[in-house]
Length: 170
Image (cartoon, rainbow, N blue to C red):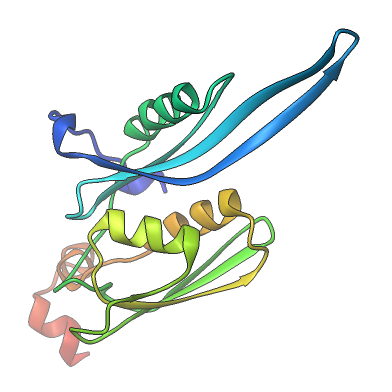
């Protein structure tokens, strides 16, 4: 994932999406203490994506901390004509994801946490399947790992030192 790290100068174009909020209880001698953790995804809907986790005593503060953490974790994702360049799978913890390209007009066929990540990245057409755990934290991390594995034809051609046409001819 460190290969695609990106720095962005104007953070105003990033849109944030709340994936999940979790209320956490700590039992102490004085009673129960409630805190909140929020997992947030930010993206410019044009190939730049990041996720963050914020923890605080109030929901709004947790979301704000998550957004700040997400802006420090930005990666570049190849998006071609609103879909992903090829099929990819990834695993994080108990969550396993499969992402496949789709034709124009299909829409994002994914559930919950995966949908938030894909839409924030700017993907408008793709098929996605989540296997294993439905934990939103692990799903977000597995989805971003799968997207970071993606490479477009131009990148492959540059790495091999050949033209883009030769990549498709074999």
